[in-house]
Length: 179
Image 1 (cartoon, one colour):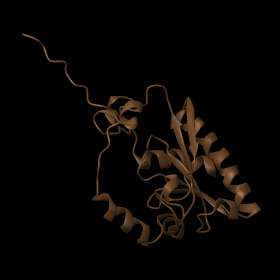
Image 2 (cartoon, one colour):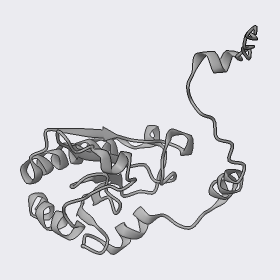
Image 3 (cartoon, one colour):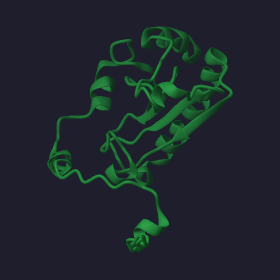
Image 4 (cartoon, rainbow, N blue to C red):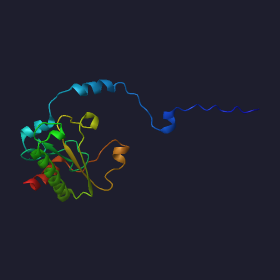
């Protein structure tokens, strides 16, 4: 009994170069269109209008820029530096805004080092929706303290992030360091 040789299906160039699975999600088209047209207000401007408080999460309000805690932190101490003026254009900051933005970035890192003793930081700014900005119309620096082992199976497998300190505790630690 002769065995038939199995015919191999010819692979496309995409199949040859990647093991990535492609998921087709046409339902996202509605979300993307809605996200491009929504104008629900600015969470940063609303917080700035309330002034520094636990409710607003504004840790410090400077002359042109402020420090605010991230309401949905990636890690303990996740803070952001925002201009007080509503703008999405980094290259349109005036010199006073540019200087205070970076001075507060430095001061916030120092405060986080003192309060949390991180082993490193992620610093970054996502500009524009395609650049990854969740809040598109008001630019902001993220400052995320990092520690060895802070990435584990929970966010990767369990789709759950463990934050071991409340925003209230973080706020109370940081405010005195900006007085």
